[in-house]
Length: 460
Ligand code: B12
Ligand code: SF4
Image (cartoon, rainbow, N blue to C red; front, side, top):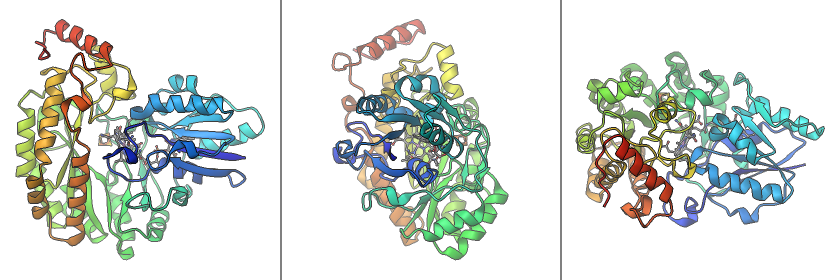
């Protein structure tokens, strides 16, 4: 029996279409492929790098879906069902909205594949598959290494991706990780992770963990196991990790050259509002210095649009980013993804502007009514900040100040130019003005909400 696993990409998000967001491979489908019993023949097709037209006919088609691509993925599911394949959907969007996804599929998977997928395949083989499979979020002690060999060779800057944990112990308001990971934080056995990293032959290993260092004891043991491998790696953590000088030193010794840090905001009020009050703004400088002292570059995630953000937030953020000497910044517009407490709150407050998932793109749209700005002001402020930050001269200055280790500098250079590519080129590319848009409903709703909460519209 043939299985085709698809990583969907809507037109405009494929690499042939031009600049795209970080061109790294995805871990979900290689992991699902690894969890597939050997009697099935599996292929992976990443639409970002190869056209779907080349897809072979398959008995079962699995599609992984995040919210940004949900509408497009549903249309793909329809196409494959019409061609006679049995279509199974999974991934973040499906896991939080299984009852929506099930309308577009023959079966859906909620949560992890390791327990659900083999069960579905067994049921399917005996002709009695169910509509929805719920994961029990099993122990990660015996998961198989991802089938990276099924990704298109030569299509990505590195194929060395892995993960050591799933989930995160925190509950930030805008984040759906707790919902996706069954509200638990699980680790893989360290020797299995180290074995996988040892087998990587790329220049750089990427840990796709949600929060690699949340458990300090585990992190220490992991770094001890990674050290003798003499590999370089990057991952995701919180600023709390950066404040632990001993642990940072150990991470650097184990090959860490860069971290994505969820800074989110420089305002204590906004962080409290986002249930991320554990980020100590007054100690950001100390944390960044710790990382820099050990040759670790910092890509800071920043979000604009919290209720405490006023129109001056953009300027303040740029000043703070420059004075902290961040190596690069990942600017986002606050986006209430389904499955987050933020989505529930904004819906209750009548501030969601649309449920058309194709607009839920933190780089391209404002899908809610901000408190202290109009959606236009928020989008314009975000865009101006990002464009300003990613001018050539400031990039060169930043890379100059990145710690002097060849691999760290190279990483900083790569990330700055990749993130610059991600900025929508013009205002109208991403958020068309009235009259030029095909989304009149959204614009009209904006008008109504602005009026109802007394915001003066800045649209002509
Ligand atoms: C690595 C990562 C990235 C990478 C790589 C992209 C990728 N899609 O992997 C990069 C940095 C490029 C990225 C970009 C973005 N990401 Co991202 N990313 C992640 C992250 C941290 C880890 C994903 C991962 O590899 N996990 C490890 C694998 C093994 O687990 P998994 O993906 O959950 O897959 C398991 C199950 O879900 C299941 N499964 C998944 N799909 C399917 C399909 C089938 C058929 C079956 C049977 C099972 C199945 O099986 C797997 C094994 O158990 C997740 C967080 C998360 N935990 O999901 C966010 C996450 C997926 N990203 C998110 C977002 C919003 C984005 C961005 C829009 C930007 C942003 N500001 O964060 C962009 C654009 C995404 C895009 N469309 O390209 C959100 C999505 C929210 C949502 N509701 O859809 C998440 C959940 C983060 C969050 N905090 O909310 N991301
Ligand atoms: S934003 Fe980061 S720290 Fe907060 S819950 Fe999500 S993964 Fe954890």
